[in-house]
Image 1 (tube, rainbow, N blue to C red):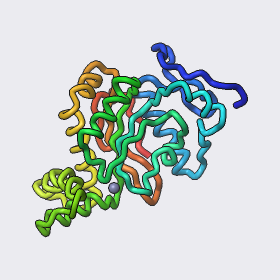
Image 2 (cartoon, rainbow, N blue to C red; image 1 turned 120 degrees about the vertical axis):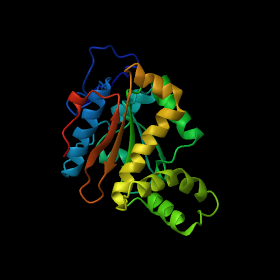
Image 3 (cartoon, protein in one colour; image 1 turned 45 degrees about the vertical axis):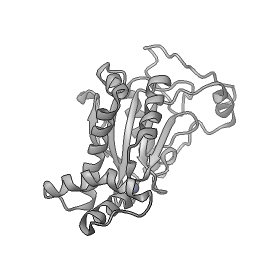
Length: 236
Ligand SMILES: [Zn+2]
């Protein structure tokens, strides 16, 4: 596009969509619209046909005065899980917090709360993926009784409850354990963050757990809280 954009920091309720490539001015402001936008971008990425929106000079300049990301992504740090790439988004779209195994500590909670309560993001996504090394490390630590060295231990201990929950449920497949860990992280987020829980209760925000598949590049929904069932996008 050729004209400067003005960031809309206080969108009206009528501005439901869209941040699609045909109209880069508006961001989705409902949880349902935000999820739909992420899935649309992921389908483009997985198909090898990204449009790379919001990566131009005009967008960069327009955002200098403020941001209004439409989703918070709490994802694993894995280098293959590059968030703006896999959702085919650009500058100012996604507020990204990444730790190994999407482990949650105070700084993570504070960052998510900032995006939800100050920036008004209507969606929080917990993003895991298959073949997750953090889950494998926790599984190994559980089997050997040896936690990780140094600060790795904090990551292992954050993932261990999910590994033990899987054991108790008789689940041994690594990727199914990853799904359980995504569910666990969503639960931890809502349990430990009163601010996020309140935003969900007020229907201002939803929390969705997703899992990314390394080979296909596709994301699917694992669990969701605060998102009307009728608006769930079809799984690809
Ligand atoms: Zn991982």
